[in-house]
Image: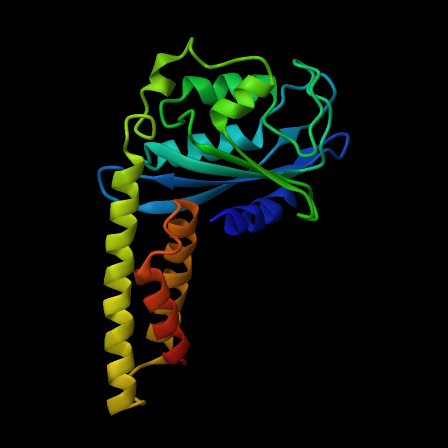
Length: 233
C-alpha cells in the first residue's frame, strides 16, 4: 500500500502550485465501511502568493474522499521536500502535515489517530511511517480535544474488520484467477487479454492494501500471486 501511495503522491506533486516552488503531493487510501469499497485520492498544495491562504494537499485528499462518501482514511502518503515546522519548530527527515493541516485533519471524523501518515522525499530515497497520533505528539499535541477523532472506526477495533474484508476480496480474486487459468488450459482464445489484465490490476491493488493492513503474509496472498504468475496474457 505504501509504495502505491508514494507513487500516486509523487504524480500529484507535479500539479502543485506554489509561488516559491514548494510543492507537496499527497495520496490517500479511503474506505467506505458500509459498502466495503476502497479508492485512492490525490491532491496537491496550492499557494499563489506569500500572503495568500494556503490549501494543503492532505486536506484536499481527505475532503475529496468524504465528498465521495468514504468515511475512513486508512493512510496518507505525502511526498515533498522537508522544512522546519512553523508551529512546533521541529525538523524531520521528511515533511509531515503543517499545523493548520493537522488541526483540519483532527476535526474530520474520517481521520483516526491510527491512520497512517507515510512521508517521503521527492526521490523517495527517505521514507518514514507514523500514525497520525504519533505525528501529533512529535509536534506537541495528542488530539484529545477532538473526541470524534479518537472514536473513529480504526480506534474502535475496526482494523480487524478491515482485514477480514480485505481477505474476502482476495479470496474472490483468487477464484477469478482460477477460473481464468482453467479457461486458458481449455481454450486460450476464450480468455481475453482484457479480462486477464483487469484481474491482474485488481489483484495488485488488493495485495497492496492487504500488505498495508498487515496481512501480506496471508496464504491467500501467496496463492493469488502464484495464480497470476500462471495466468499470463
